Image (cartoon, rainbow over all chains, first blue to last red; front, side, top):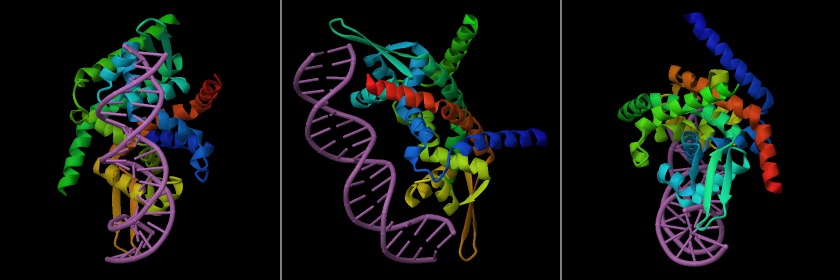
Length: 140
Length: 140
DNA sequence: CCGCATCCGTTCGGATACTG
DNA sequence: CAGTATCCGAACGGATGCGG
């Protein structure tokens, strides 16, 4: 049992070394692409957008706005643009009247959602624990 | 090969259903703990703090400030406080002169870093692709 | 229907100076 | 050393109205 935990630790360190070996901490953030990429991909709203697209495959602007509860026009369209630029989603506009626009994940986006989902699932399962921690901390 | 992709999709949908089954999208964000927990745990600075703590096990305030390049006093101490409250890290103060304070991951935090690392590793591996997407998008 | 433009309050976060 | 306090500019984000 102890060795399982130890092995886990070693694997963790290995991965971190792989990453940190490529990330000189003295580099300014502009020179560290991972930070940049991560800041888009781990944005709160973006995560919700991607998850809902993962669920429905195809969604139109106003449907997205409905599901990603609380998002504003401005933020939604801005995030969609960035997510499209980074290659996670695809935008298709049909020149009808009124115009119809559909969004869906790219293959790359689907891969990312898959990763993201592991994390989201973990958070979902553990959010009660975190809320409890928070409460206890507040009382001390 | 097709079936592998299909199976993948099915598993993704299953997970999303599990989550979305518990998250009524009409709920305001205040009533959705996952969003709240996620916003702390997926914060840019918090992620960097947690990863470095995963690597070094124990770090003092100023060491953290050095490794989490570019972070300010204010933001660092604020994030540390929140991460402690949520149960990811532990703070130990030794009443020496000058005072010494050490931070380390809790067991819970280590579990989270493990999840986080999968995501970070993926981003690290794929950041060149994202940067390329971005560039191409800019040219169109 | 999709989304941009504008306005404007709020929050975030960096820099600096200071204390136990 | 490990923060806190303060100031201030910058960025974020919500609401609304308009245009294609």
